[in-house]
Length: 440
Image (tube, rainbow, N blue to C red; front, side, top):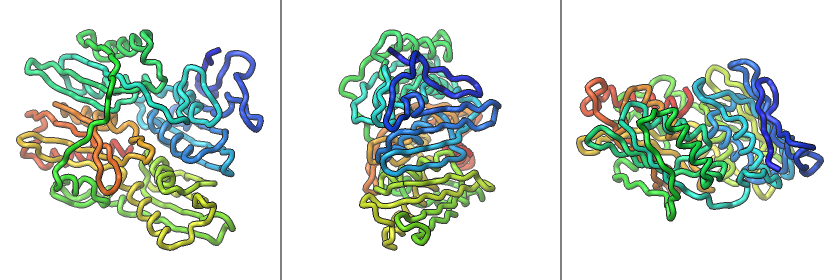
């Protein structure tokens, strides 16, 4: 029997439909593995509690999903013995304009929990190959069109993997979205009709769209010049020719971070203490670094910000259950954390012949996952600036012994916001895009 989930303001998002909906290990029923207590008033954090068997990288995957649904983690507590975990996250919407899909989020988090299988929802904790689809969208061009379409897809739990945007001489635009369905239902006619109807309602009756299977889809690869590659993927923020203007005082905060190790407080764990500038994906960036570096987090606390900074305490150990004592390993982990926490996204503007191109890059997890909502945030920033996108592509590129997701936006020149000969406007775009991505 399918589950009927209901999200009530001020109440928990819980599963219904009969007598309990199945059971789990250690006496925890499936519906209690994930409980969401939605905030009663605007601005009040909602509380997400996860109580389920543990597995490597689960905390990272949960934070990835929370960020993907447009939520920021304001506070968190993590506890696990390696077999069972108890996670509590206090979350708030990244923006007041985001319509949080609490039911879909609960389903997604339940599907991540080991041993729990949700009817009519994919088991994301198991390796799988999602079906790719091609969404064709044909419409008269206007400012903000690409972001408005992206917002609809995001609310429908449809993940964008690649985009091709082309503008015709008669002022119309053809957007090609290569997508997957977080609910794995896009093969159903009803799901396709829902998607097309939602796009038409949001974008207007002049829009035409269709959804087709994208057989043989492969993630595209970007090809950048050596000069641009070196600048884009460098590990430090700098005042360079591509930034045009010096870093603002709050951007210089990104260079300030304290990472320390203490092996005196616990006989079996190393205490990792972090103090750094806040940004909306901070906990995700920390946990994905731990995951990729094979470091286990057994206990953790993510405290409220103090004047724009965060304090994080993590009790960690290596995969061989030993403490992190070696100073070389500590220095390596500290350097990696500072890079991933403070400089997780690279943003720059370059000239592409007579045109102006915006580049945004983020590292890809070893599991192959890219950072969520990057395309959403970039198109939002450009929409708010009134900058039109002539074409857009998403690809991947290897640099520095790792893979990166690269977003390329060819920007439209306008009299209101000239770009070709205006370093000030170019720098303004870089600053606005970076702030939106970081949640500032």
